[in-house]
Amino acid sequence: MIELDGVGRSFTVRRRVGRLRRETQVVHAVRDLSFRVDPGEFVGYLGPNGAGKSTTIKMLTGILTPTSGRVQVAGLDPSRRRTTLARHIGVVFGQRTTLWWDLPLRNSFTLIRHLYKVDHEVFRRRMAELCEVLELGPFLDTPVRQLSLGQRMRGDIAAALLHDPPVLVLDEPTIGLDVVSKAAVRDFLRSLNAERGTTVLLTTHDLGDIERLCRRVMLIDHGSLAFDGTLPALMATAPAGSTIEEVVTNLYTRRGTPAAQ
Amino acid sequence: MIGAVRAYVLLAAVWTRAALQYRASTVMLTLGAFTVTSLDVAAIAVMFAHTDSLGGFGLYEVMFLYGTAGVSFALADLLFGNVDRLGQHIRSGSFDTMLIRPVSPFVQMAVERFTVQRTGRVAQAAVVLAIALPSLDVPWQRAWMIPVMVVCGVVLFASVWTVGAALQFLLTDAPELANAFTYGGAQLTQYPFSVYGADLVRGVTFIVPLAFVNWQPGLFVLDRPDPLGLPHWLRYLSPAAALMLATLAALVWRAGIRRYRSTGS
Image 1: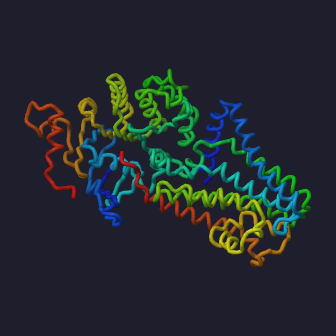
Image 2: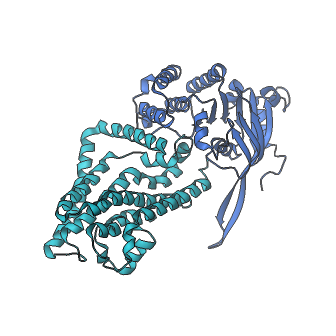
Image 3: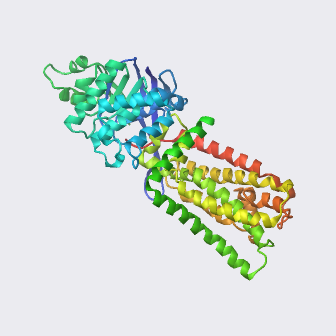
């Protein structure tokens, strides 16, 4: 479903040195990244801030073009076939909304229905389903800017799923949510994966997400994979009896390879 | 292409319906746009109270030039004026959101917050044109150029906006540069080009082809020789100029998208 082969993305950054001189520096956000996610998998994508998680997500969705390597999502090259891919992938950004700030939630869904050309009857059924499981009913007519973070996140997840994509990519979907909202989001994602077989890839800093949801964990550090395996295998990288926090801290701080320049 | 137009119309309808929830406000803003731009005509009227011709053109001819350029500009502004918000979309991250949708981000950006109030300006320019035309007695052998020039004008203005927007992929804060040519161009095209200096006219003919919005095809409709002595055949070239600038805009836009770097998070 998702396939990366030797993918790299670098940015050139210009820095002022002295009064007029500028220095160009190449920053490798992601380097030589290869992995494969099969249909129906639920994968957690971990990594410290600035490790390249969001850059990876943006390459998967076609927002960024990789500087090297090959990406395939649902059989398509995201950066070349971005608009076609959009019909096969749902994307949620926890840090910002994909909804329209000034419009009621309901109107956002209507706009998305037109963007994805979802058939009216299919849309009605899908809306009813999503409204029920995500409990959107009470705030469908509230402008998005007035929603609480938990409500907005549920709205965002519904928006990403209106066109029923086989792949769902979430960038920190539980960031800033309270325990109850977090549990609601997790329950929903788990049943989505179990019942519809949707392939889910999520990035998070909340290890609870990983423990409760992900059968497979990938850990990226300094732009390349530092671990890829099942949750038990992840736990086995540290002495027995360690908590998941300790295991991950250990992996984050064990900077074996001098990846960054 | 058809898909893009369809998406545009459907999305514009949603925005219009949302705006019409505040009906009184929308109506007042539309009337406001109509009234404020009518002051331009007042300025023309004041000028003609003191003189019989402006750059060799009579009142109705000037109104004709004003009306055609005004309709073009107002339509371009209504349909594509929002593309110059690209910088804001990039900074707030909402441009990322547009890239994950199955519709071209250009269409999404153009239709974002579609402001139906801007029809006020279209109506105003159309009224001026409607007043001028009967007094000019244009035969149909030349009148066919009027719709052609309006469409070309829309394409020209929209292309300049697009180029300006695409530059914001490189310099996130450069909408003013494009506005100098679009809003500035709208002011410029209100009057016969013969009132301007020859170098300026050459510049807007051959570099930023704003002379093809209304001036050159207008000379054809009014059956006038070029007061500045530029070649006669230029007056047929509006479609070619529009096509060229639109192609350039599309190329620059594509190059910009490829260079897009997104934001940090």
